[in-house]
Length: 183
Image 1: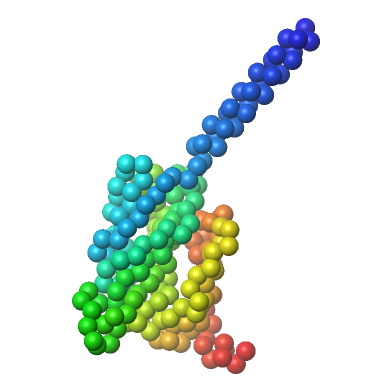
Image 2: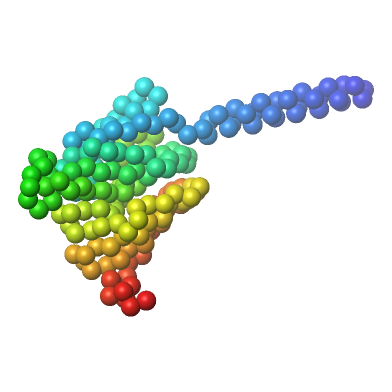
């Protein structure tokens, strides 16, 4: 009788550990590759290819550099935090912003079909719009922080994002540049 109970306990533990391992495999983050094509992002994951139209959220003439910074999967959505940069002008020249770069941070919420369900952007580097980042972004674990100034709006921004709570998107705190200069 005791041998039977030990065997049942052993099988139960074995089944529980294999179920936990299977559950862990289903929550693994998908391999996602991104690249720019014009003002769109080409997303490739597990043989699937999607074109994400981001031209309303960026100011670059085309996307040359697209980097996936953080990815989180929650229930039926996948959240991406993407750094997207490209030249200010389609054809570089010797005039204003002719060789400059535009960069935006994109928060993208994708549904199960990998289509954009929601998207937000923060332009943190721009010659055309007179925005400049202080030191770029910093990632620590699953959190991103960045500060930048917008000289057109005359505001200083503090941006933060937590991939543990991706549904909140990123948060922006704005303060006047004058207040920042006096502190």
